[in-house]
Amino acid sequence: MKRTVLSLILVAAFGPASILQTHGSNLASGPETGDEVVVKINPEQRLGRVAPGIFGHMVEMLGATIYDGVWVGEDSAVPNDGGLRLDTIEAFRQLRAPAFRWPGGTAADTYRWQDGIGPRSQRPRSLSFWQEVESNHFGTDEFLQWCAAIGAEPVIQTNIGMGDPGEIVAWMEYVNGTHDTRYAELRRKNGHPEPYGVKYWTIGNETSYQWTPELYAMQVRRYGFYMRQYARDANIIINGEPHNDWVDRLLKALSDRPELFDLISVQCYLKRALTAENQAAETYALLAGVEKCKNVIDEAARSIDRWIGERKHIGIMLDEWGSWHKEIDPVESFPISMSGKDFVQPDTMRDALMAARMLHGFMRRAKRLHLAHLSISVNVIHNVLKTKGPKLVRTPTYHVFDLLKHHMNADVMGLEATIGEFQFEDEDRTHSLPELDIVASASSDSSRFTVSVINPHLSRERSVRLRFEGAGRLKTAASVLTASGPLEINDFEVPDRIKPAVAKVGKQDREWILPCPPFSLTLVRFDAAPAGS
Figure 1 (cartoon, rainbow, N blue to C red):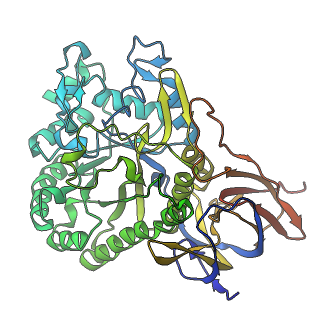
Figure 2: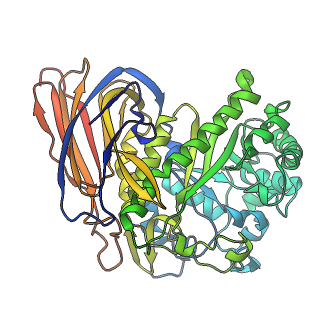
Figure 3: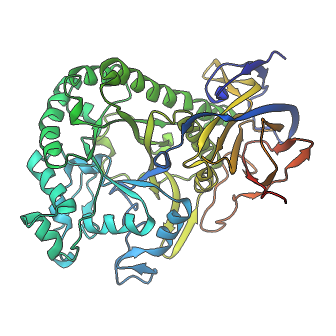
């Protein structure tokens, strides 16, 4: 079988390599033994620091995301702190969840922030964009207190669909104001004397439904001018779109005003069906679709370089991403046809492995990608937590985030390995996936190394032999996440059906042997042994 050496970053997650044919259209019933892969890791070769923000989440005011998932009210029998459910807070703390985007998504385009402040008994009920009656019991103060309880940065999605610059600046003043002014005083009156210090503010969401790139650029000039004047040090995010030449045209139109914004957002969903006859093809196609999201990020980076260049560093935010099952996605006439939907879908093992491949791709783009938000994280679409009354379930995707959090704030290391591909058929075309997807990172002081390995094959077990160049004595701890099939889930009846298990790491001279079961994520941490031990 022909092989290709991949140097520097192991680009098997996206790049071409060699081919191993996978035969048949059904899921294989038993594991097969694959070849051993040798991976050379160079701790001295650092390729960018992994921003914690790429492990972020979105909590849109949609379905049961907020009400039941985040907020239960002070009178609820569910344990809570001032109405905020404690088990959700604790679960996100465990993930070290770095950031949350709220109130949408699309829900933000009609959200009036002043409806959600002050005594809850006096807050008006309103009709959301999604045609849901909104009590407004969970508003700005509740969201910011929730973020503070978790230790996460809030990312506030502003309403430019039905709002105006004055409304947004007033919101910024309410949240961050320090003077004796109307909205800062209103925040103090509502029981919050100190400013919240919110850093991230957006201008618009999915703006192509309303404007061309050039017309939206005029909105950025209008909103950005006043937002920047009010908050010179804010991180202002403008909205890009993941199709055609939207980002390129937008940045061209704003190339003379880079001082108005600091990041540009794009988004990417992957959509496959749970009910298709050929589940092997659906599974592999979902994992291979990660390349689409990689291209969205890379195209945005090229447009930034083309139109802004070195005049200012503009970061990238993937404001929404995830696996969106076709069964709950009315594709035509979005978003009007989607009103009234609850968007509930199971989180499967294949969704989790797709998330792992996405996060690996984010880490490889550490120098460009600053923030990314899984959509919608609690109960809706691609989620890490499910709640029902007092019950809480950690989904397989939750465990992916829990394992890969060990890469946070570490430097991606250079790798050299020989990786092959296997082929699969989907929609009468031949596609390919890498046999393995590997990322390695090191702490800034080289006291800890982390290696994560995704084996996407449904039946083939692989073995990885790791070689560290110039590393001292190392202690290991490893975990593996796998399941009996790609559609396996955790549910309220069996909440721990899928969870990490201890993985064994073999040792041979200065090499470590890591067994990788079929369809799995394996993570191993290497800690430098104390001198003299």
